[in-house]
Amino acid sequence: MDISIVIPLLNEEESLPELSAWIRSVMEEHKFTYEIIFVDDGSSDKSWKVIEDLHRENPFVQGIRFRRNYGKSAALNVGFEQAQGDVVITMDADLQDSPDEIPELYRMIKEDGYDLVSGWKKVRYDSAVAKNIPSKFFNWTTRRISKIKLHDFNCGLKAYRNDVVKSIEVYGEMHRYIPVIAKWAGFTNIGEKTVKHRKRKFGTTKFGWSRFINGFLDLISISFVSKFGKKPMHFFGLLGTFAFLFGFMITAWLIIEKVTHLYTDLEHYRQVTDQPLFYLALLAMIFGLQLFLAGFLGEMISRNSSERNKYIVRERIL
Image 1 (cartoon, rainbow, N blue to C red):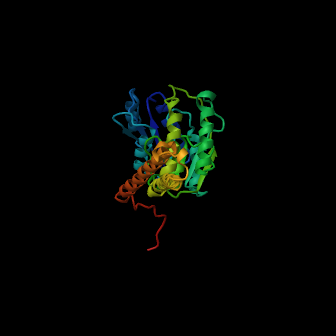
Image 2: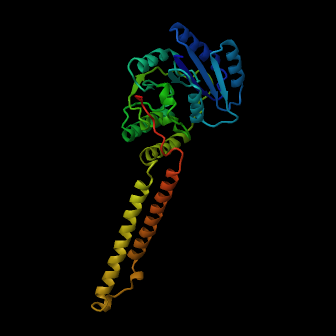
């Protein structure tokens, strides 16, 4: 199969028939073998009934339905597991992504050799305050942290080689950072294509301001996991050791000062425990010990994890 198109959706009953017909037209025009995988993320409208009707009309339309709303990341992850095409395309169900972009995305994967191609909505029709300005900030931050030169990490229109989607796991709200996850998994040939952004035709957006707070926290999480996920002791143990040694040295200095000045400066003599610096040192030692133990426990959990020695093999010669 040439192409699998994975489309997560939530309450998009009005847009699905037009989107399905548009994709079918593009596929038939370019003579692609394909499948469309709609993942209904717990819709409360008639989206699932529309998907069933579309399947009866076109056997290449498939559907997966969640019992409740789990989020876009979960929908994509399940769609990736189901996808059989050599190239996997993801797009939103709201008709703001154009299926006319699919042939060029497919060519960039198959002919140009990219592992992943991300769309860039250079001209957007969203609210500047609600989406554009925060999106630019998060894209800038993600570029600086990940060193991936993309303008729009969160664009729903992306293309992947099949082995990319089979090698990564998307969870929480990590769909914003799939290029970062792919790079972490060893797929470094990541490209970008300017794509058309269309005004929403039906319904309303499903994202609010909370997604930007969650996005920032997810970025910190994915950055930490990518560096220290399998070696937590390297982070917590190092910080804990420095903090403990800092507190220990201050305590040792206070004790030495007490001993050396015990009989020479009785007028200004103070107990070690009377000095605020002692409690700061004690706090640093306790904090350092806790960090070290956190790293030790994290290392033990990591070593017993089934994912400890899971590595992605690029190719073999046997």
